[in-house]
Amino acid sequence: MSTTQPIKDKEQLQEFKSYYKNVKKNPRNHMLIIIGLNSALRISDLLNLTFGDFYDFDKGRWKTHIVVKEKKTGKINRIYVNGEISKIINEYIDIIQKKADDWIFESHRSTPRPLSRYQAFRIVKEAADYVGLSPEVSCHSLRKTFGYYAWKQGTPPALLMNLYNHSTYQITKRYLCIDQDDKDSVYKKIDI
Image (tube, rainbow, N blue to C red; front, side):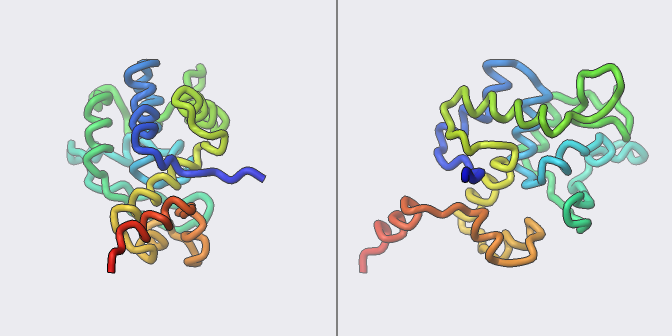
């Protein structure tokens, strides 16, 4: 059985992130990957984001946090709009032409609706295949990649559990996909 994996190789991650910017030149798909990697949202929650989640149309300013009621858990998640998310939105979005209930990741079909999960999967897989990532890369890899790099940068697993809204520490540990290379790096650093 194949398990979704995070993108651990930094060079491949950079190529993956830039595929829809530099190769395919598709702003919507580029935003999907960047916001997915930086928000740790499940794909079902990511696809339902609207411009009103990011921009306060009454006050005429960008929000510092997005608030999402998670589809799977029903829990409220408040997510800081970090520099990468802010940068990508400012690069591609002309807010003047948008309404609060317009989807960020709108389908190109005639009836306004968000991208389907299947289409999001195809977008992620195309970028992953282009850079030679394993077949275990999927939309959920965006969420897992966030956790893997947060953990590598020293974020305590208990805090990651809270960020992910996981009910148990065991679930969060599985998300981190710690393998032998990660274990070896600990031993290499220790010289007592």
